[in-house]
Amino acid sequence: MNTRRALLIIGLIFVALIAAAKVTSSNGLDQLEQHLAKQGWEKGQLTLLNGGYSSNLFSQTAHGRYESSDPARLGKVTIKIQRGTPLQAWSVANYGYLPISK
Image (cartoon, rainbow, N blue to C red; front, side, top):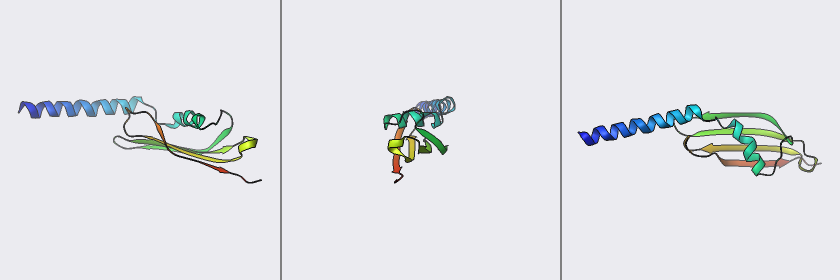
């Protein structure tokens, strides 16, 4: 009986930690520009066309679609970032650049 109770308490603590981390952490939209910078884009080169985020019990995703104003790289940029739990760092799940032909 003591083992069951201990496992229940540990499980409840784990769920409480995940819930607290999810409530206090970002939804990912503020992380998109940081990950675009890692792809070589500077602030001011991209205009956000649309974006959003979703989350379930543990995982979270955020996405954005941008238009480039950089004369050397005109086109559309899409990015999707995700994390398995609110305790993990955001990582790029999908990135794409579609140049506009002149």
